[in-house]
Image (tube, rainbow, N blue to C red; front, top):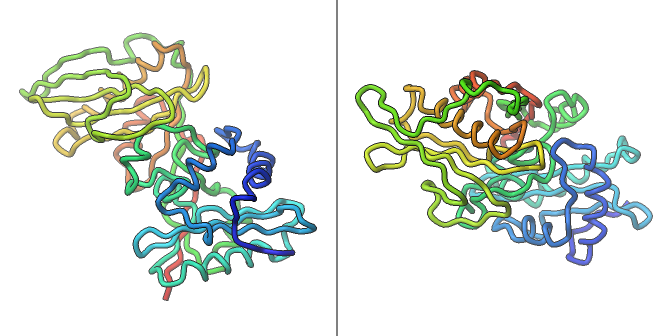
Length: 312
């Protein structure tokens, strides 16, 4: 076996290995070479030295990818083809990536939304703030399933500790829903305060300038001439929408505004002819949002398990 640093000459074989390995994953979209160049190599956090490729007899059998953001390190990707597991390849990749990340205070694995290469990366919002197709797994980023005990045992054995889980949540049957389960009001008053809901295309009040890969709709909440939040969604395919961003300012919370915006977005998704909607959220850090999603009919479709290792 040979492990070496990624080189751009590896791209065709890397993309082929990726598509073969992850085609069974939820929300999988075949990876194109140009997408890989733009979405991975084009990230601020990407460094070729952080991406390691393991080969046996010249063929790719495993990938290990790390990235830095501030004083934190991220294990963005660690994958070994099933037929080559149990040979210590994953451990060697993890050791090499961890060594390259030397000097960070901690290493996070399976960070989903917050991973600086395969996630949203909030530090890169101007360039990456708009909706883009997921690679696979969740609508926000890559991760490991909470029920994957082999991965859990592997990570815990090497000093990683499970963190609060992330959820993929899904609502189906929008086409068959009764109209009174949606919100189509544009103006209303709550606690003597007037609110307005606006629906716009490819525009954000939260991000004044951003790029996006796919067209999207944005349901915005306004009051007194000021924006209080928005729900940004796009179509994944002919039946499924994904909510890419949902934010509500603190002074708009606790009054049912989040539910009103979400139900307006679901009405918009239904009107577009789609039947289901998927989103990603934190289980504990977004506990209030999870409650709102459940009230709107969302259920947990998958639980993703992040891990963290403190570096002494």
